[in-house]
Image 1 (cartoon, rainbow, N blue to C red):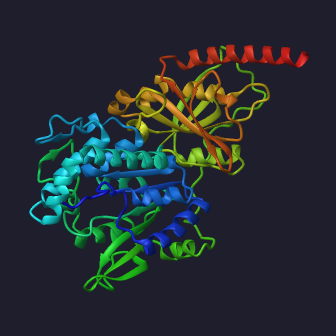
Image 2: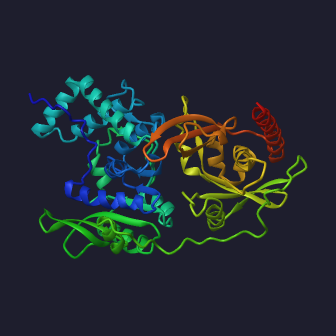
Image 3: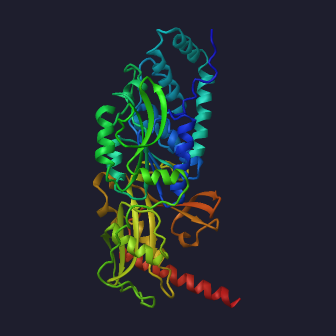
Amino acid sequence: MARFQNPGSFFLGTLVAKEQAFLKAVIENALRQGYTRFIEPCAGAFAMAHLAQSVGWPADQIDTSDVSMFSSIMGYAITGQDLAGLRLEADGYEGEDLTDPAVALWTHLVLRTATKAGKTYFAELLHDLHKRQEHHVGVIRKQLQRAKELLSGMRYRPLCMWAHLTEVLSDPEALVCINPPTYTAGFEKWYDTGGRMRWKEPPYEIFDPETGLVKLMCQWAKDAKALVICYEENEPGKTAGAPVFARFGVRQNINVYLTTNRPDEVEALARGKKIVRPGPVAMEPLKGPPMPADHAITERSRVEVESITRANALYYRSIWTHNFAGKSAPINLALKVDGYLAGVFGYDPGWLNIGRFGQEERTALLLTYGVTTPHNTLRMGRLLSMAALTRAVIKPVLSPLEYEKVESVVTAMLTSKPESKEERGIMKLVRRAKDSKMGYRLTYEAPLNDNSLQGVLTEWLRKEAQWRKARAKSMKK
């Protein structure tokens, strides 16, 4: 009987060393030159996400998706999501704990292997998987732990690639690396269990490379603001995107290509040369002035929050952060005090399905950024943070389904200090990680509250008064 030492080694993708070397240079230089989002639809075994992480992309800037059961089990395990949400079922394995990622992946591998057990190799592999179940589950568990250590913090969703692309192709800060199926219904055939294992499968469109690649690269990606790189297996001269890399003879008359919507930019990135990014991002001021630095704020002041455009937000973020705008956000808001603009902030509702911060599983909304106008005596950033934690602010900007999910707000920051004084007493530090460049990557979280904006103002003024009194007392010593 053959002994299969590591049948769980399925975390490698279809990329060979040559493709990886080319992509590694492109991905690394894209990060250096201002891209802030790494997108991997059709994530498979997360090969490109691993590659991005290996060259320095922060995990919380990596956004992945897939429609396969295998990828979703693995993605949920990496991101700390509860597998109960996948509603896994397996014929003949009702006694196994399918909410345990390692057990679920072992079961999936067994049933996938069973569809090919008519061949001697697969019959022996199937026998070994059962005979040494504990060993194989343990191997898978170790591999999952390694993947989680590398990619913990990334985003994963069971999602159709077209739905994912709809979200990101308009973002000039996004690098999209996609490895779609190389044959019709590739998702279904590659991970087929013969219907013996089922789950809460997301709706998706079956991908036919003959038409799908044309739709992807010639229609959707052609004029996209995002930079798109696609893995294609095709005949010479018949690629849908512009080829920037080729590996010849993968099959008879078929080559492997990496294609893109902006070949000049990708070739420059591959060589480490400075690139010309897409045209300047639109920036537009709001009507009315920012709040003066000496404006007196009292309990009679009026606090409001209103929706603004991304162009509005970028205008003030650029001014108040000395031309460093940082990440964009799907939802952008303005904080106003007495009719003056006091700050801008943004949420990313895509994090509602993560819920992995702290010791308990929770459903969190990401506060992507928050910047305020300077004030001579008051800490305006704390007023903004407190307002951003209220249901009164969040409810109007989320769909009813999103609002029903959200329980807390999280935010992340890079600092040279192990703690942010700006968030002390407002949000709780739930994660601290070393960062090679800045010192620390901090994650803060706070539950939503039912306070009104005027109530927030009253509480903030009280805390500011206490802070000034304590500060004055300490300076006398």
